[in-house]
Length: 195
Ligand code: GDP
Image (cartoon, rainbow, N blue to C red; front, side, top):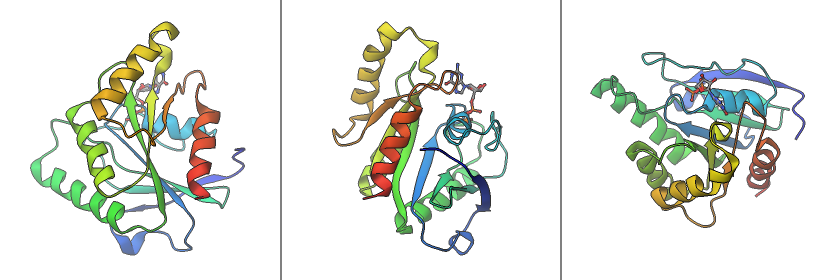
């Protein structure tokens, strides 16, 4: 997929703010610091459209990026910051739940995990939750440049087993540093867009 146009159209907190027009959407979820902004920037070939190194306390919004006037990436705020208050966590949960449960245009969610570590309890919860709502999940294992190629398969096995990943859900290794996995991720995303 050659991205010729990409821009953020809205940061939404409630359904009335979601864009109209009915284009297909791909959600992006993962714990903070997993490399989600880097993934988005790599996929759309922009240096810094999605802001990297998000900090706790920043506004929790669903960011809609329109790509080639063809689809949206919907950046779901990262989870897993210990310091987030219970109230904030609940607001986050409500916002995501509303989006995931109600949004007909949502074709699949890219769930990002760090290839170096076993998925966290939050990652597992997120995956199970998406499966509960029957959302197709594309698991992307980020930062694969940080471990030697010979160890990739061993780490991917841990990811698969910890998530109890459904065989139909693809698992893609990715490096935004080296561009590994970019074409595969686009191919996979487009296969869900066309479904
Ligand atoms: P986010 O919080 O999930 O949006 O994560 P960021 O995209 O801000 O990335 C967090 C940190 O990991 C930053 O310092 C990135 O430069 C780094 N990072 C992200 N992806 C990769 C990758 O594929 N390889 C390496 N080596 N570093 C990465």
